[in-house]
Length: 193
Image (cartoon, rainbow, N blue to C red; front, side, top):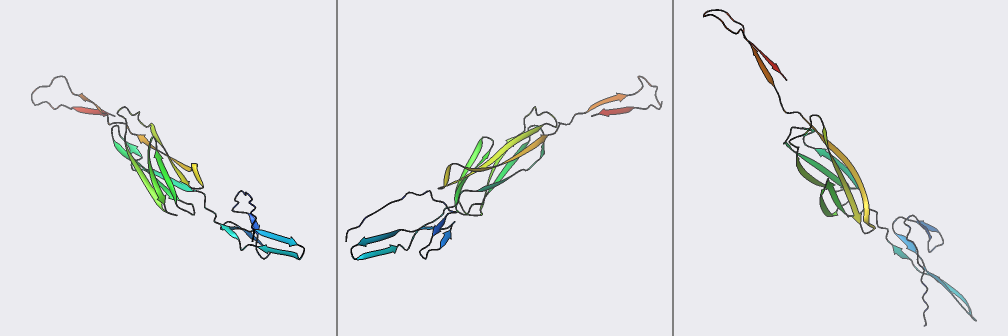
């Protein structure tokens, strides 16, 4: 009636090939089954036994895919525009996803498998925006779960808007300096962009 316990420490390998109770082999990923066996020997003979198995579930790593967009690819000085980042959980389990747009961020907890989450942030183009220059915005999404909570896995996406020049026009007028009553005169206006 006495018992003896022996413990072994393993690095859980979801692609591991482990022996089965019938002497065959089973491969991961879910679950990996570990077996215990024992042999008892005394003066009356020998007896062996193998456990039914200890299944250990393989939890998925986090996975995230990110796409980003801007509602106005071209903007005027002082004009508002919105950057949108959408992340998809491509893992086989639930996970937390944090979306970053430049310095702003939003955490979405317990995102279901295949679900999308979206974060938007509105910016204003600078007053002194150089014509035809670009304003870049860096977006990234970080997914974490119990298998990888620091640093997690990430995907990035970059988007930019182009500054348009403000309208500008110069008009000049050309006409004779003087004319008599009833004279036909020509007046010309020239506009320069």
